[in-house]
Image (cartoon, rainbow over all chains, first blue to last red; front, side, top):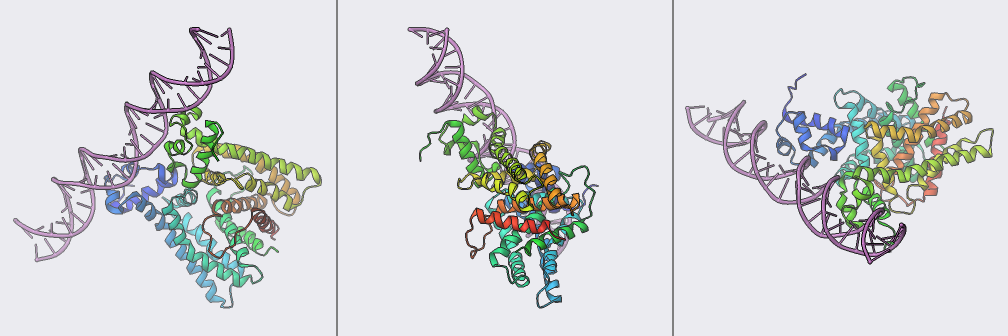
Length: 206
Length: 206
DNA sequence: AATCGTTTCAAACGAACGTATGAGCGAACC
DNA sequence: GGTTCGCTCATACGTTCGTTTGAAACGATT
């Protein structure tokens, strides 16, 4: 179980775990370096500052996730150049979300909580990071949806995409908590289909 | 504009505003007391600790909000005893959310951010608080929805209600951020209708 | 073996934090 | 008129925070 990884990676792993458990502001540099068994100064040496560490932790997950989303959108647009179906567009950004945060063992589930925290802890640096990360994806998605739903106004599409993302994010954040006793366990694959069906119908609402 | 209110109320108002702007952990006791023009010790005198102040700020909004939701559900069920329409059920919990979280007042955003923080908080105490606050409402809503949508399974209703709540919550949390430049300002009343239309269609999906 | 860039180390820094204290104040009460 | 009670005040306390420092250890290159 002991870590063969280098200092930088150990810091990233431990920071991700602790940030997701307690929030970025409630985790100190000392908490991280102690648990990672590295020297206190290592964070400032490797990352410059705590803020830069937060950004590094966050980007390590969000960058590949959004790349996968863009790649999936590329794929469905390549298959049908006249414009992909609504369901395919939705799937292209819903599926990578689930696959990129469930898989990993150590900090995999931690990521969705960390992301939830980033949305509710409005530090300007984090807000800028979110904007930078999501704006290109958001614009691509909006453009594809406008093509697929020509009857809807641009702003309707924007808001409905926000609703969809909210449903995805909230499900992701709370799927394992607040479960009534009678609720059967459901596979991720089934949930992806449920989510796509729900939001596709929402997009097609009059 | 000067405040005729007593110290306790001034602290609550200023705390709510500052928490919403900067997040709970980045606002100090001194920030609040300075802006409220009260003594530094006033918070510990009136609330005991900073944590208790946060809870007081949070509960001041969430308790009346959930009471209003239950009252609205009561109202629509009283009007049509055979079971209210889907849209009316959704409206009964969407509308109070928006009306009770500030509306015109500036401190309204505090609630949604505090609430977002609570959702990503793994602390058992906060989880119990959320459960206690939302379980009665959730059960009432599920029961009403089962009646309104007899074709849907219990678990489908549960998940779609979760999606709906996620859309509402995420919209609420980010509606003022991440806005593209072209997006026109929209009234809350319009947003309520958009949200109801979206989620009602989602509930009716095959 | 000597050199040099990179990484780790123990120790310390000043600043900001939440909280505690005891005196001071005006109004209400006996 | 003296005492009590609720509240406000300035000030201090001890802790923890992010960051910095200069030296020591390490590994590769010559």
